[in-house]
Length: 368
Image (cartoon, rainbow, N blue to C red; front, side, top):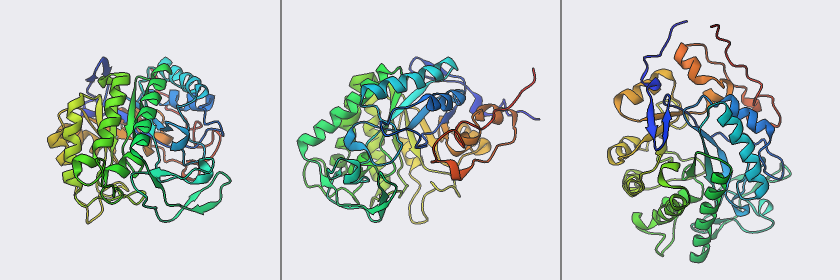
């Protein structure tokens, strides 16, 4: 067995008061393992403890309010029971040396009245996504047209983000990551393909970025800048999201986020051949973000030990987040360090219930 200990992935990095032993982060991975109360369980605690060797553990997307729900089995951070559940999870990770950032999530238009006690989903504008969504009974039902948030509702949603961040701090989290990616609510405000507003939250790039700026300001005020991160997906068209000029939009976002001295900025834009790689008619945006953003940049999307090392070595990123490889390899940093075999995941169990395909992957045994 050879070693990659000289890889740039294994250099240390300081973020605020944290010194990371290496640069391999656990990307946020929705796994749909909660019950109807959306409270993290002892199974979640085991799952995250198993992966505590990540430089930073970013949790699965976590709802900030009842109106932010859109999927079965996803956790929240807006009730006292959920805070207690997350505290068990974070304590378990901390016991194993982990550093945990809870990802704060609002799905926006990608919901359905059946998830919202009959209420209409909300978004930047009343533009419906095409296709269908799974309802609480498991049936596929068509998306509905969302309702555009009113100005006072926007401010209430900003407060929901701040309250969720405060709850994360009460649960013992080391930080929070604002989910501004993958076509969810913040992304719906950012992109001109989903934002048709004519007020101060729509039209120009500066106006479309206003909601993200306000959310980030509120969350930073709640937690402190070194405990706040933001995730973006500038070239991703997941959930029918698009923009006419993503380079102009996201370089402006990077310049706005420079004002906050965040823990890191997380960009999902995969290597060539990865599902998160830009489409053929979409430019790469991450290099333009790198040129404008002055802080620590994390990148994610189809990287392995070799391409991750190259990204750090070239300066394209300061941290690399790994998702799929971590599912079946809870000890991924050790495997990369030793250049050991990578176990393939059981895709059929990604969104199942119980331990199968979740906590039943074995770690390596290393003889001393």
